[in-house]
Every structure is written in C-alpha cells, then in structure tokens.
Length: 377
Image (cartoon, rainbow, N blue to C red; front, side):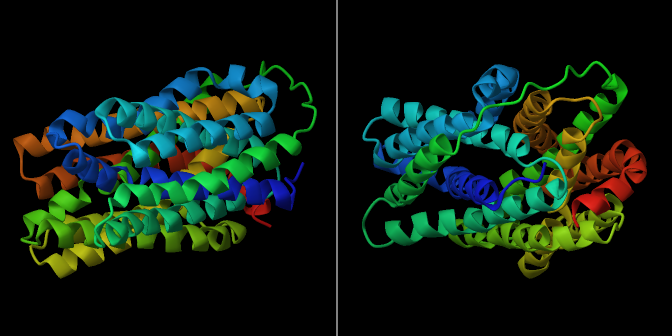
C-alpha cells in the first residue's frame, strides 16, 4: 500500500533531524573538547554512537517494531531529542557521553522505521527523496554550528534547533498510530537473495562513509588549513544532496542506476586521490557525492522488497547493514592509510568496494530493474 503524504512528511522530518545532527557530530566533538578542556582523542569514540546505535536497534528491530512503526517513530524522536539537548548543552563529559549515546540510538531508530513506513509502490523514489532531505540538512548542520560559534557562543547550542521538530514529530507520529496488521512469516524468503541484498547495502554505505569521514584529512593533505578543509568537505554533501534529488528521475526511467552511480563515483574518487591541487580534489568530492547519492536508497529499496521478507525484518537488516558499514569502513580506510598515503588508501579501498558492489549489487538488480522503475512511477 502506498504511504500517505503525511507519513512521507513525517519520515522526511525525521531524516532531516538525522542529517542535521549526525553530520554535525564531527564539528560538535571539536567544540566539546575545547569547551571541556579535554583532549579530542578522549572524546572521539562519541562519533561512533550512531553506528553503535544502528547495531543495537538493528538487533532489536523486530521487537521495537512490534509496537507499530508510528509508535517506534515517536519513541525514537523523543530519545533523539533528549540526546540532542544533552549533547548541545553539556557542561561535563558524562552528560555529553549520555547525550551522544541517546542521539545515536534515537537517530538509529529513525533510520530503522524509515523503510518500514516507506514500502510498496514508489518506495525507491521516496527513499531517495527523504535521504535527499537528510543530505541537505547535513550540509546545514556543521555550517550552523560554525556560524554560532563564531559570534562567541558555543556552536554546540545550534544542535538545539533540532529539538522542537523532533518533539512535534513525536506527538504527530503517536497520534497517527494505526493498528498493525500481522505480517506473513517470511518462509519463502530466499537466504541468498537476502544475503546478496544485505551485502550490497553494506558496500553502498561503506563507500559513502569513506568519503564522509576522511574527506577533511585528504583536503588538509593538499595544504588547505583545517578550517578551510572542514568547509570544503561540504562539496561531497552538496553533491550527494543533488544526486538524491535527481535519483527518483533515474529510477522512474528504469536506468541502470547502480552501474551509472558507481561509474560517476569512480571518476570522483580518481579526482580525489590523484591530483595535488585542492580545487581538483574539491571537484572530485562533489562528483563522488553525485555518484554515491543513489546507491543507498536503491540498495535499501531492494532489501525491503526481497520477496517473502517482512517489513520488520527487512528494516532491521537495513539498520544492521548501515551500522556495520559505518563502523567498519572508516576503520579499514584508516588502517590502509597508516600503511600507505591517504590518497592511495582511497584507491585501494573505494575502488574495490565499488567493483564489488557492481558484481554483488547490480547483477541481481538487473532482474529487478522493471520493478524499481514501476516503484518510481
């Protein structure tokens, strides 16, 4: 059944909050270390709170969704709002840690319920649109923190902007709750189909977070000062937002979205890794963002629509895939980067991931191209 416009708006609002807060974590931790007079290395683990949250809610996803996706959406919004408030106003490391953990869990809950609510015809295009909103607010979040901090007030307070919308979403989702219809047991779900779709999603998210986490370090290696490098990272987020707004157009026309996206990503990766001129690296980040943009929503839509797989189980698998990629991919990239130059690390990490995604993700997706095309209608 096609989700109502109200449901799409609610999911979009939740994704907007996720984009704004999670993409601000890096800047927030820098400001937090300064405000608390702490060593940044002591707080860096807080940036993993979202990945950890995804693993937790993914493991408990079917249990969480038993209360219904609307009530799960409401609860996740409250948890995220409390976490944002604690992290933004924290005056101690303990409060900041509690805030980061709650934000990670709440944001992960919002990610969990998204594919559970956006199912049926149009799912692939709708997932692309709500993720485009998240990418857009992801650009605005770090800018808002930096702008507020520049006027003499700790920029962490800018996170509080997300609290009222999250509370409004919590109330609206709770009131919009409808009785859940028992789903059939996924006895006919092919383990191979589920496994292939899950691996494809892990690869798609891994590629995205390799750029998200380490783009700033690559820009600094070209000679840009830290502040300029942080600002220039937004080129990737802008490219990803633009690509996700364009993704529904690609899906509606039944184009081979995955190979096209991987090709553009490879071109961007080469521009990020090979030149030494900062301007070319920034252009490469923008192109890579365009390429990466459609991979997550298309691969998630495929996992959601594995025949015989229930909404709760597919949503849980999706959260587990994202959490696995967010925690593992940057760690692998930095491990490679310690052995070789970071520019080489991009080549030996992102390019094989992209090639593997073509093999694992696109070949089975070719059989589903007609279905994805109809979903975008």
